[in-house]
Image 1 (cartoon, one colour):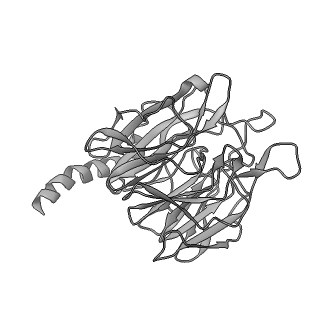
Image 2 (cartoon, helix red, strand yellow):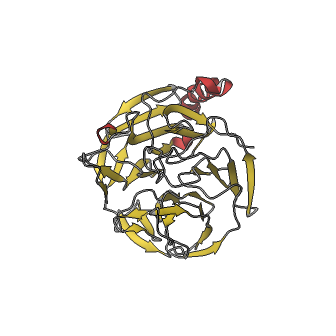
Image 3 (tube, helix red, strand yellow):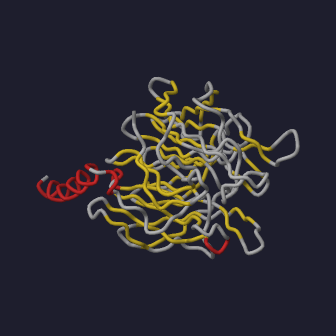
Length: 346
């Protein structure tokens, strides 16, 4: 117990110092968007992986990983994610003391996008990456969540043939995949959500345009899936009422582990590309609304209708002792940010 106290004291001091002035939370070493994010150590270590830089070109897509440990209060560059190229719209999560990174897509010099099946696991103690079993149906822009520090859920996403409604489950203990009950709604990608209390909640995203014209339009469907206590592949899906504000693409979202809710912020009212442009080549408008779904109460609640420094294309909200954080992302003016945004809880 004494050893634990000695370890935690400097960590807590660093957290309190940062919390005293949120403006002192250091920005990431580089501005990046569409970066995968994850946390370990109950939110005391946060990770930003890959993504695209300020040039917004195929050759500005990075494989780099940056880590902020609250004990030091400083970002450090760690070993890059393996692979022949950096990726956009990958999904990441912390489990079993490791950071797992799933899928995403690459872009070549001709602008061709390729969704990959890669799964990589970073073990901080070893300071090494390991290759895990490939995703059965490769996807990017999926919703991710974890239960029991073991079962990782990839919900929907975009495959080489378009959006899917698959729910793919990775067992981090056995390095195996299984298919869970697919969600009954319209297949989507760029949707947003999380997993808390054995419950998956996701909203919106982009769906194929049934009317022609633009390839994709925004969906406004909201779904909740209750995971069976005995069978991680059995999910009971039900449709939720509309959330606050319009349907959106690229909302930044994540589950609050300790407060039993899922937080949503930003996103654009039309689908957009990695540069933030819609199908007409115009800058997509970011919604300033931040809201939550209270899992225990089964209801939506608006946190603020005017979020400060609102973002899109951050690949998750991280639950930390300082509050919910967004790392980087696209801003209202189309710029890519290096700042760490602390979202309001109430």
